[in-house]
Length: 364
Ligand code: ADP
Image 1 (tube, rainbow, N blue to C red):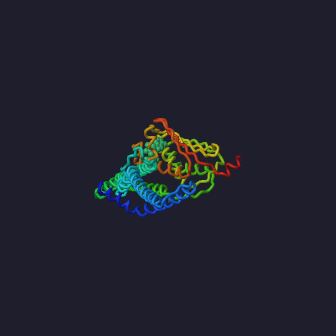
Image 2 (cartoon, helix red, strand yellow):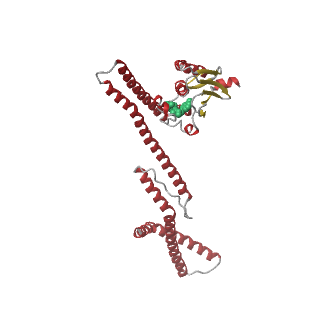
Image 3 (tube, helix red, strand yellow):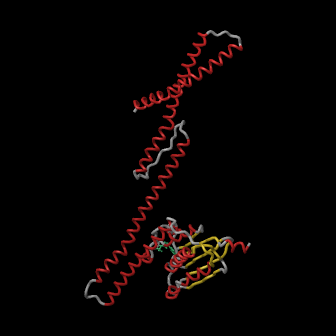
């Protein structure tokens, strides 16, 4: 190692030697010119011998000083830049091989260049980010496989049962219904995964149009009429008039449908679901409130994560992707979503999106 470094130094000196000689020659000529002008103006007699000795000394001095400073600079670079560069290169090679857990220690020696620590900081942030994306990816695959297994097992088991010849009509209908429910769950999950994937990869570009938000909310809520009638859930609405938004109607519909379906799903028969829309300055504020089972703060902290299901008793009616989709759409619309909930009392989701600019100007 030491030998290699010594050879490198000699090679460096050799490469620079011609340059040193040229510099020494120029400095010597300049110095001699200066000395002869000075001696003339001071009327000092200098012999040719004196001048030759001075020229030789200057030449050798400059060559020696150049060599000395080059060696000092090589050592300085070895201590400051080379060590850091080597660390960064070897860490980058690990990342290329797929190891995202690699981190570089900041350089703490006194002569270290601060720019290297800035690079190291960026590098460590980058690998941490890559590692979390990798974890998300593997978690996602694990979750999808897990979620697919349950309906597939149901389909397989009921499919086998359906094959038995001495099955009553009643049982056959029951098993066939179980198979079709499980396959619907699978299809719903796949649709949601595809939607989420397209939203996350920004393959869906919002198609903006200006429309009355109150009308859309009423239309979407009415799709659940059957549910609230059969389960005797009371509906209360307070929809402000003429509140316009410029947004992608289809995407926002996804938000309201998910919030309504959760509100009905988590509310006991005889409970109440309340929908309100009001204008708050430049925002349209939508609140979907229910008197259902509510959720703890612990559950509330995770509900926007993919595949998270806080209430497993309703697990068969969803796949934990609804609120992840809702959050993504609200983010794309540059809106805000918040949740307030108390266990046993109910939940309120509040969505804020910007109102249409013309609508706002009319008010001003
Ligand atoms: P799922 O399709 O399983 O309902 P979501 O992403 O829509 O998935 O919701 C995730 C979790 O958030 C649910 O499992 C539930 O624990 C909680 N949650 C969502 N909405 C409500 C609500 N209105 N009341 C109580 N809990 C809710």
